[in-house]
Length: 286
Figure 1 (cartoon, rainbow, N blue to C red):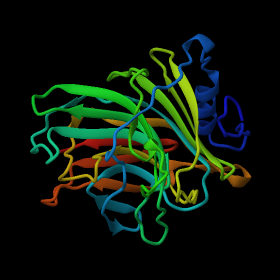
Figure 2: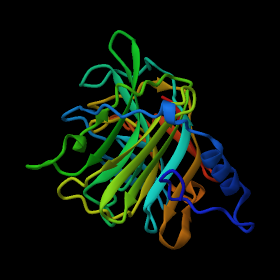
Figure 3: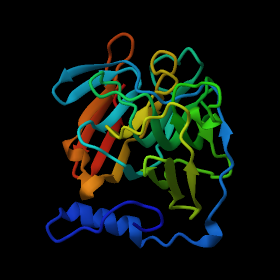
Figure 4: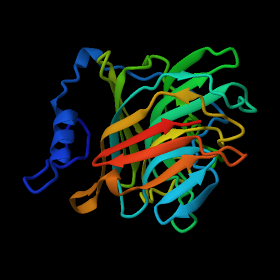
């Protein structure tokens, strides 16, 4: 464990890709002068749930919200990844009922809506990419620990924007999301281009259950998915050094994950997912 990241050092018997990922994570020197205290601005009503999903094969799903790789076997305490923030623009599909086109790229734990393993919470962090009805694109970093809102729930059960952590398309970001001893959540976030970084510890919202049943690398149509939000056209989202960690030195490799793709209400699949050793790529094919 280094800089709060739960990731064991690879051994000679591990895949070369895991060693490369380890080197990427721990070779970067994040400077104290670039560490920020994140400003947290909850967006009440904005969420990042998996929505309705339907199995197409043993390892393939479609739904109205998530597209990416999901490891839905095992027990997990952390997930991490790097990705280049995609550029977004107007697609040929109509805008969502909320207006414009909306997307989020992120990593997270839990929240997968398979009834056999579903949990009632999801800890996640990433980047929102929006195109408004006039075609203007905007980008913001966020985090969220969703659990069904109730009296006493913190604001971060909703998408919580971080306005003092600026991000732009083409920049590479790093994110790690963790459960810590079943007592708290921990998020580490860095922007490779600017050097800015932060870490934040979250108290669990009421009702969070820490199941750790699934880990995910996702490009999403948020707020319940299609047709409320519609995906913009986006450049490929390629998650690298995509690793899950669990008890007894377990390592999650998305090469063995399930895939999920976004479908429109008309039944048109508008994303495609390719899995690799410690990598997930999501393309827009709308």
